Image 1 (cartoon, helix red, strand yellow):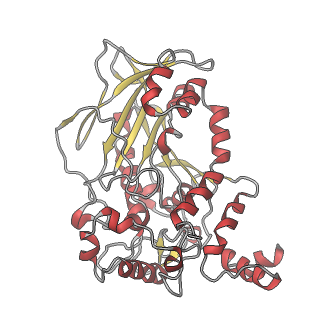
Image 2 (cartoon, one colour):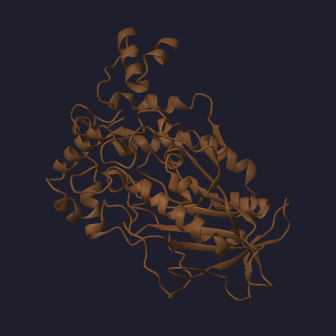
Length: 418
């Protein structure tokens, strides 16, 4: 018997977790988008031709930001709720220098000012990860989807649209800004008239390594998110959005990321409301003390034959991301180890020279409205991971069950109430 890899375990768990999302999509997404989920991207154009079309014989939409002018495309969609609606889609607007070479693991570097005109870029930009898509380190891009005034060739409205910024989930180790098309914002924008933005951020070790020599260790991915949010928000009028009107929302690891952003005043000053779907601000499984983050990162580097930052920056993506065997991964960090290691070992670090000094639940001073949502029994998906979690002994008797609950919740009061 060959045990499954930690990544495979996590993908199965999140496939279960996303079931409520699939139902949400089925309920709120018009038929033409549901068809796209049943087809691959090569067949999508054929299936959607009667209902989604590129607007022809019109000037290509453009938005101008400090670091360049970006060309998009017009898309006309129609369903029973909206009738024909023309939107402008701007895929893959870069918001930072590619985090490669000496920039790997480090905070994102803003792009310099430029008058360059960028052509339409429809590549599938996914951050490096293992699974169905390997991705690429050059991944710090966001998508903008806007209501569009074709006559004026400008965003509908005069800087009075509301904005929404989406942070995807995936256990901090997989996913992308549109989750392989599942999170297409076309229906939301057509029905609500908001301007919508989907952002990428680095994943796994690339986004959360707490290595010696890394500035703000264990925080690169969070800083990716913050830089994207700041670029979008400070240039709100370019997208037809009213400054300060943004809703930041996310699901699962994206929801935990929202909570981290709420603890950062440089983010919250741009927000009007926040929404967290399947996340919270205090669970220690998702926020790691800096000492534990450093210990795990050091052991992870050693498993790759590295003892310093330069060595880790010189590895190929495959060498860096390849899974350890489960028996090695389970003890890679040694004691202490991240709560759900090796299945879900990465997350924002707290304390020391990390970006946050305490769990975000203890750091938030903002008073912006916050909506939290959960699904009944959604934590059950982690049961399948227990055999691989450090310190869990199976089969569970009453003593081991209590010890495991304490390991997961890290709260005797909560455990005693179960």
